[in-house]
Every structure is written in structure tokens, then in C-alpha cells.
Image (tube, rainbow, N blue to C red; front, side, top):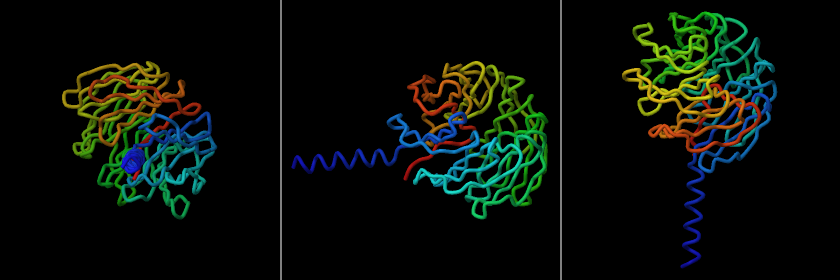
Length: 314
């Protein structure tokens, strides 16, 4: 009886561990990706990725992570289960922001040094097209239905709206000064850009093709996450995450985190928000309801994780 109880308990522990979310933290200075178990808060693997990696996107099924290396001019394709780089795809310019189509392909990469989005076939390992956008595209985001790709064109102070089917830019929308990160809500109706020079977030109605609101946040905002009816903004120079209500666009809180936060993403269930702190080598876990930091988790050297970095394990 006792032995059976022990086996049941162990099976529950293993099952619970298997269901834990994981964060794939891109460490630019450390030339690696840390796999962080978000249940235990501990690193469970380190994957070498050379070329000063910065951007990341996970496939919808969580099976693959795509990591950009601006200095290495490449895209690493990581098998998230095996914890290995399955392929490195040579690119051009300064690959930074990255997004993957909901179907799993293609992968879109922003050339930070130019004015193009590179369309990449991950199976063939090559660029299939270049889509002209504004100068210095940084963050990328796709609508949930995969029909539109949004590019934050930093030096052009705009976002580009790209029709995925035709692979062409169909509109540009002015936003704040020097947009960097861009996030789209789950309905695909609104985009939010973090504008690093104007210290604000632009709220864009994608159907109307115009900015419908501007929210002041902290010093040098870099990325936006959405959870529980709120927007969470990483303010790099302020070492904080600003929070505002997405219904009335009113400020809700300023949460102190580590130094130079950049990547920020909500957990799949929306209960937690994770801030990746570049200069502190940590990830801050925030309760999306109480707006309190629950814990700090150590990762590699110089973490950025600009993009989507959280997966739910099978």
C-alpha cells in the first residue's frame, strides 16, 4: 500500500513537471539560450548559440524556437525538446526581430541594418523573399489568423502592415518616436508599440489603420505584453515594468524589476508576466493580478529574449 502511494505521488510530480511552462531565454553576451523551468524557477539546459543572439520566436506548437544572431547574421533553428540547434540558416544585414507564421512556416526576420523583412523557408534553409518596409525594422508580430504581419520600423517612426498572402506592404501607420517592440492582441484588432524615444506606447487600430491612443510610460520602453486586461511594458532605463489598463488606457502601476528589462511576455494562462533583465542576468516573475514581483530567476549573461520565448511543454 505504501509503495503504491509513493508511486502515485512520484507520477504526479513527474506529470506536473511535464506540464510546466518553459522560458527560452536568449543570452546575447553569453552566446547561449537558457531553458528555464518556470515551475521550479531553475535553469534546466543551456544551448550554445553564437553570433550575439537577441531575438526569438516560438512556433505555435512550441516544438521549435527561432533565434536571430545580429552579429552572426544567421537564424538558429532549435528543437525545443532535444535542446539542440537543429540548423543554422545564413542571413544578411542585421537580423533582429523574428516571427513565425501560425502554420509553422515561413519565418519572418527583420533586418535591423536595412529596410527589409526577410522571408525564410526554415525547411529549405534559405531566404525566399525580401519585403520592403521602413528603415530599421525591429519588432515583428503576426495577427492570430496569420493574415497580417506588423513591423515596427524604428527609424521611420511607423509600423508597416504586410499582407502575408501577397508578401507586400499594404499600409504604413505613424506611431511614436522610434518604435521597437510590437504586440498584437488575441483578437488581432489592436497593435501596441513600445516607442523608445518618446517614452510611450502607441495603441493602433489595425482595421481603421490608425493610432487611436498614446500612453506615457517609463524611460526607454522596449516591449509590450498583454495579460488580464492590462499592458505590461518593459522600461529599460527605468528598470521597471509599467502597467496600464487597455480598456481606458490609464496607468495602473510601475513595478521595479532588474536592470535593463527588455523581453517581456505573459504566461499562456495569463496569470504571470515575465520580464527579462539584460544587465541583471535575471528574469522577474510578476503576478498579473496583484502586480507584485514573485521571484527573480537567474539565467545566462546578457539576456534579452526580444520576442516570444515561453512554451507550454506537452
